[in-house]
Length: 111
Length: 116
Image 1 (spheres, rainbow over the protein chains, first blue to last red):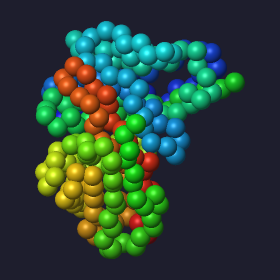
Image 2 (cartoon, rainbow over the protein chains, first blue to last red; image 1 turned 60 degrees about the horizontal axis):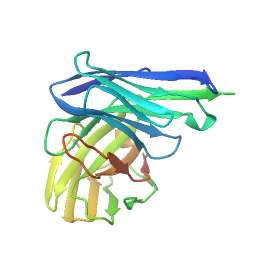
Image 3 (spheres, rainbow over the protein chains, first blue to last red; image 1 turned 45 degrees about the vertical axis):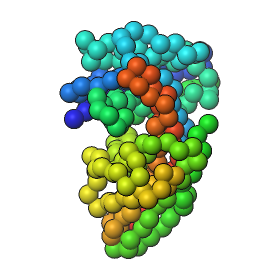
Image 4 (tube, rainbow over the protein chains, first blue to last red; image 1 turned 120 degrees about the horizontal axis):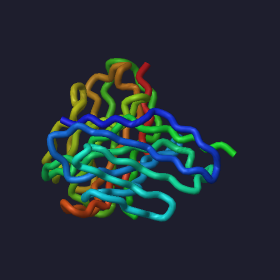
C-alpha cells in the first residue's frame, strides 16, 4: 500500500517562496505528482516527477528523491491566487495508473 | 482539454436509499476512477475501470458498486446510503501516460452528496 505525509497548513505573504514537503512509504511506484485544488473546485494536475531531480514549470517546481522517499513542491513569487490546497500523489507501479493521494496542504497567501 | 462531466452536482438523500452518480467523458479514455474527498483524508479511491465492463475495487469500496457499459459512462452506486457516505465525489480520467510520462488525471467538477 501507499502512505503519504504532507503538512496540513502553510501560510505565507505575497511574493514569498513556499516549499511543501511530501514523504511517502510505498512498495513501488512510477512517479510523484502534484495537484492543486481551489476551494469548491476540482483538483488540477500541476506536475509529475518520474525521475529524481527538479522539474520546473513557471513559478512552480517539483522535486523527487527516491533514495530519501521524499519530494517537494516549490511555489515561488507567491500570488493571492495560489491560495489553495496542494496534494502529492504517487502513481502505483501497476498497469492501471492508479494514484494514491496525500491528505493535502492548505496554502494561505496573505497580502 | 478532456471533457468530463458529473451529475448531479449536488444531492441530498435519505439514509437507506440507493443513489447513483454519473460520470460522462467525451474523449474515449480507457481509464476512469471514482474518488471521495473528506476533510483530513485527501482523495481516496473507491473503484476504477480499465475498460467497458472491466472494473476493480479501490481502498474504500465497501458500500459502493460501479458499472461501465459504455466507454463514455462510469456510474457509481451507493447501494444503501449511510451518513458516513456524505462526501464530495470526484470522477477522474487518466489522460496520456507511460512509465516516464504522465499527463495526469483530469477531474470532473464533483458531486456533493449529503445523506440525512
